[in-house]
Length: 200
Image (cartoon, rainbow, N blue to C red; front, side, top):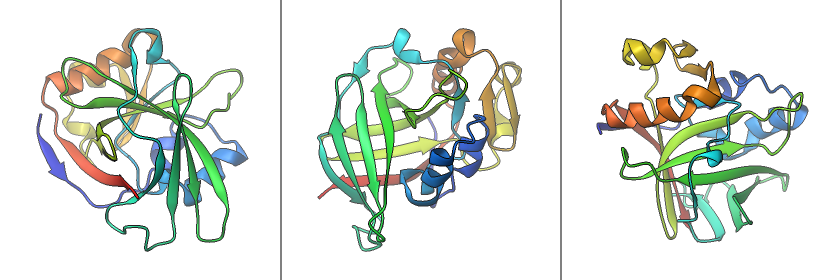
């Protein structure tokens, strides 16, 4: 697996490609964990927890970005629930938003597949984002395709996706979401380290 280092990347395009335009989702864009996550993630309405075991590699508690150590006023409270983590983002103006997070193991990647969603349903369907993560104890690092690298994906994988640049939607999630995520890892597609969080 090739890994490159990238600076903070806006996730606005990653979220908007999933088709969720709720006001809550728009608010999340402004102040949450998504402010530095993952333009190069994959979006799908398919929940891979139907096929994979949910893992809990991260300790509950209060987290900050390793790059700022909390000096920007943002922090994130992580709570373990029955089948996911609940992450609440807290901003300097005392507002907060919630995101849900799961981790899964796949044999093709030495870290985790990360699944993120806002907990709401859009027209009866959820929209999930899939990225990669290295997570252990009191630290978690998210990885995704680097900006502009959608065009470098293998053609047979691109045939399963709708995408421009880094806006990537799996067309048939039930059939292909897990396959795409695993194949990207198996084929050693380049990933970027986007940001890391550490427990305070």
